[in-house]
Amino acid sequence: MYMIKSNLAISRRNMIGSLAALAGTTALPMPAWAMGKMGGRVRNGMDQLSGPDVDLHVGSGLFRTGSRSGHAIAVNGTVPGPLIRLREGQDVRLNVHNMLDEDSSVHWHGLLLPFQFDGVPGISFPGIKPGERFTAPFKVRQHGTYWWHSHSGLQEQMGHYGPLIIDPAGPDPVQYDREHVILLSEFAAMHPHEIMKKLKVSEGYFSRQKASATDDYDFSGAERRMWGRMRMMPTDIADVSAPTYTYMINGHGPDDGLELPFSPGERVRLRIINGSAMTFFNIRLPGLPMTVVQADGQDVQPVEVDELQIGVAETYDVIVQPTKEGAFALAAESMDRSGMAQATLTSQPGRQAEFPALRDPPLLSMTDMGHGGMDHGNGAHGHEGHGAKPAAAMDHSQMDHGKMGHGKMDHSQMDHSKMSHGAMKPDTNLGAAPMDNHDMANMGGMKMRDTSLLPDSVKVGPGIDMVAMNPMDRTGFPGLGLDNVPHRVLNYRMLKSLKMDHHKRSPDREMQLHLTGNMERYMWSFDGKKMSAVGDDPIRFRYDERVRVKLVNDTMMAHPIHLHGMFFEVVNGQGHHQPKKHTVIVQPGSSATFDVTTDEPGDWAFHCHLLYHMHAGMMQAVSIEFPKDA
Image (cartoon, rainbow, N blue to C red):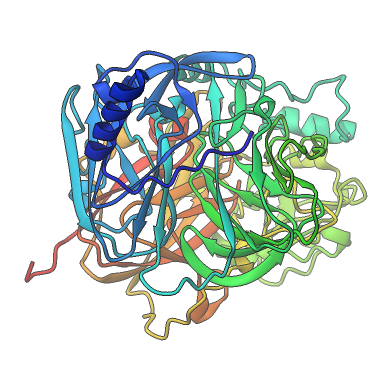
């Protein structure tokens, strides 16, 4: 089955008129959504809309993929909703018609536009009531690959999302012969509120990869005892996974056999969008290298890799160039390796690729528990990450570093003599902290919740069950499970903006935010405070302020943190070529830093893009003052 790609360059009004005329002459039934009705079978896949007026009709229906079916929210009768195709510099009116019996919304993810059209209920507008229409008129100021989705409740999980592509006003810096949009998502037959309820009442409810006394994971007895003493699970990678989800590409599960055509020698642009609610994907096409040319819609210098991990809400554009006829597997394996979204890039209709088997699940390490700076690899005790946090602020209360020559650092109580340094495997990847050779049983005695390490801005309470002792910067880490694969994998430090920016200013000030949570109670927050507690107390910026923001992840899960309304620059060592992004993954127990120029006035959302984390409270509002002459 080929992806259906219609080149509709007409408004919805014209479309409905055309459909009505067609139905009248051929006796074909009109689509339900075109007549203002929903509730029937939702179509897999998406159409395309463009032009100065774009109309989206949000309704509900029954969706099916493979053996799973259930309630869905469709836009214009499909899941995903239609691809919106715009051009940089054009004026557009995006009209959202809410045909649900509940409030709805659409957030234009990654778009620069006046804040009141950003589509976040409670922050930038009140939401769209049932039966009402909301219009966002604005001039398109950018180009690139983006997407849109509901910001109301858990509607996004049910299918309320779609891709958005903006062609450049001038020549495209990326040369290609053909393109395919790759929109990754999940479908669950279970209602998302039921998923949320189960996450709240039972820790690890959806995990089928838990470590146990009889599992096959490569752990020593000491390691197992250590994890047990910490009351943590090294397999706690994803909150919801394949037993509940069907992973999809463009609304098609693996059973649909989605095919993407190519001709030998073509440069094929894959616009990869992670529109899922909760899943990080590892993307590869075995035997076919990928050249990354865009990240989050921003042009970057081409970099060739064999695999990349894409966090929720991120986008990557890559170029592939198959030189001969055949079929290549586009494998999008979930980060916990419980399942895979699939499509075949093929030169012949019906010719399917052979997909690789799921790899073994990755395991969390002490680095993911916030002990990242303690590089004990090879017995050298390099402590490479201690520079990431002032030594005085670190908790070495239970360590005896006295024999390690750590200079002025107070390691007097850390007893490494009891640590068998042969038990742990070294990890040579940037940002990964090898813990080889330690007797990890002794590590279990470390305090996992030493709140004395937290600044006063963090509210200490039951919403925090872990504090990263030494959260090192891991922008050089390729993602969980990809640090030991035998091929090239993308990491943030490999990203360089295409154009040099000589106008970057040094930060006017710095701030630090902690990503906090309690896994057992499924509580998520910024600085220990849920959105419901800080809704009237946003993070405030002056207009055109230059701020360096350090995000510290005090949890054992990777969080994709998204800032609405503007781009920030990831501080990755690339100087005037720091890449601009709208979403940054903060690795477990680690930190990531970005610089932002706050020149988009108004109120914006700032949150973890894992849907259930955001819903549980890991969200904040950002308020940027208006310029004095506005």
